[in-house]
Each structure stands twice: as structure tokens, then as C-alpha cells.
Image (cartoon, rainbow, N blue to C red):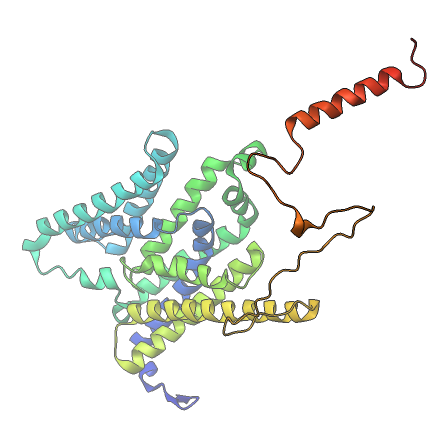
Length: 353
């Protein structure tokens, strides 16, 4: 089986089909949440929840249950606690996020140490992704979770956009700001949990952020940015899995690298396009363009010479200034002018002697 001259025989196997399907779902739903996180300047929240998810994975190993379900429960609880701490305590948002980083990583390592005697615990698949080991049950979980997330983001898009733009105005308008912020954190936790199979817990933030900041360079409007980011995430995830299958490299890192390359190329092309638009605008308005080599013709500014309006004027170059004598009007001259004006007012027409 070939497509555009590319041999896709490897995708006749079930595990590659499941890997491609899982990546497409995650790549489509992650930017739907990430667009709100970027607008609220919470781009690193995915990393924080990803570290907490490591604790959930360890709990799954410790209790001999599915790590995806324990990770989902752990990340949801952690996201709610972090949002409540940020809102109702003296802890700032960056401090609460730091606590998630440190506590989640330490908890995962500690619990993994407790379960190490029960057998070999491989965290590599969860830290950096393992799409090729995705089971049919995992695909169902990823599909249902992704469908719920996209449905919520699309249904509540105006409200979520309002709290991202101006939270105080949204509160005055009567929107449930606290509930919406908690809902955004919970959906982020769901995306992180279902994405750990695709790109891993340490790289999951890339799917949330990179497609959004890429399309922001050329889109206008919140809706255009959201749908464009979802489309770009879908294409990037699918292309990454195909490239990983052909090159026999890890799919998660390939997806993220393709996203970063797309961001760099978009930034360069957008800068060139704006430069070209500025060039055309300058030509249209008739503004002379500066030489590219920086050479500019220097010319001494011409000082206009005022023609004398009355006879007896002294040329400016023949005026000699003696030390201690002021050329222009002095304070005493101004005072004298004021006195003359006052005297004229007293002796003018209509004055009484």
C-alpha cells in the first residue's frame, strides 16, 4: 500500500492503526483546551498536571489497576485543588503550579519505589509516550474523553472566551467564573490523562500549546484561532505517527518535533509576509525607500535667510557681539515693554486726566 510514493505497508497492522487513531484524536482535542490556557497565560499548566499524572500512574501500579483511570482521578483532584488554592488562598498561581511540579514528581518516584518489589515498573512509556502499545480499551477511553472535551469546549466557548478576555467583566455580567475556571482545569486534566499514551506526560503540554501559538501568528478572532489550531493539531499528530512508522522512531517525540518545526516555519513566513506588505504599502503611498546598503546622501540643511522688511537692517554676519552684552531681548526690556503698555492704557482714548 502506497500513498504519494510512500510505502504505508506498516499501517496494515492493528497496533499501528490504533496508534494513528489515538494520535489523531489527541491532536484534535488538545488544542481545543489549549487555546483557552494560552489566552489565560497558563501555558505551563499542562506540565504541572503532567507531573501530577506521574503520581496517578504509580498509584495504578501500586493498586494493580489501570494506570489511565488512576491518572485521570489523580489529575482531576489535583487540578481542582490547585485552582481553589490559587483563588482562595494567599498562594499565587506560579507558586501553586510549582507545588504541582515538585509534589507530583516526588509522589510518583516515592510510590514507584514502594511497588518496585512487585516487579519491573517501566515509566518510560508513560513519560515519553507509547502509542504502539495502545490497546483497544485505551482507544475507547481516548475517544470518549476527547469527544467530551471537544463538546464542552465548543458548547461553552463564548463563556470561556469571556473569562479569558476579562474575568472581572465576566463576573459582573453574571457568569459563573469559579465554575468555568474549575471546568477548564478539569478538562485540561482529562486531556493530559488521555494524551499520555500519545506523547507522554513530559511532552503533553506541546499538544496543548504549540498548535495554538502557531496559528495565532496569522489568524484573527478567537473562533478562527481555535478551529485552525484543532486542524493543525490533527494534521501534525497524524503526520508524526506516519513519519515515526516509516523511520522507526518514537511517535511522541516525532509529533512534538513536527509541531515545533511548523511553528518556526510559520514565524519566518509570517515575518516575511509582513515585511512584503510593508514594502508594498510604502510603494503605494509614494514613500521613498531607504537604500539597502545603508548609504544615504548627506546634505547640509539650508538655513533660510529672511529678507529685510525695512531699511537700515544690519546683515547677520556683520553683527558683532561684545562680551557681557546680550543680543536678544533681556528681562529689563520685557519689563520696560510692560510699563509702556500700561502707560499707553492710562493715557489712551477714553482716559480721564
